[in-house]
Amino acid sequence: MQTTIRKGIKADIPSVLHLIKELALYEKAPEEVTNTVEAMERDGFGENPIFRMLVAETEGNVVGMAIYFIKYSTWKGKGVYLDDIVVNETYRGKGIGKMLLDEVIHDCKNLGAKQLHWQVLDWNEPAIGFYKKYHSSFDTEWINCKLNEEQILSF
Image 1 (cartoon, one colour):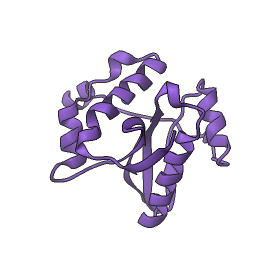
Image 2: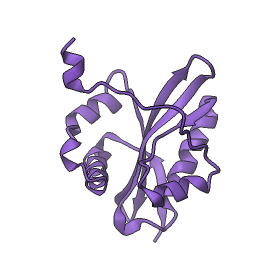
Image 3: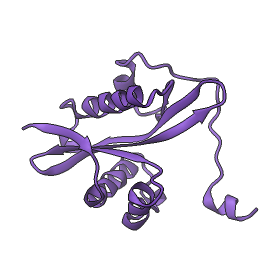
Image 4: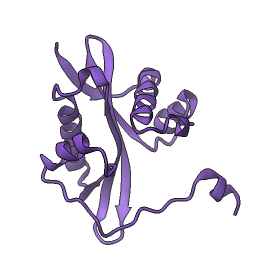
């Protein structure tokens, strides 16, 4: 079984959205996924793409993905934010996550990024162990903040 990592295309979106929903189920929040194929096509492949997507393909099937985008730090300059890496449960433990993250890091180098950021749930021990292999820094000082769509619309 050979796996290749490649830049995602619009036709991959349904498979990628399926992986996103699989991740949400794993994270015990399946009802939180409100994204659609149409929105992802527009946001990733429309006039002003706002995310980059890599897919892992095995035997013609998308079995993993990484979605990330450019961010900016006033202190450090250009960076990349990795929103998600997901590998189908059947294919986990075969090095596909590493292949995806390695390719994201490679793209960071090509972009001249000064930092790569992501989040991991504090209970997701397999993911934490995976990121520790990269000698990642785990930040306990900063608190994540957000406004949801309803809060944004209320202003």
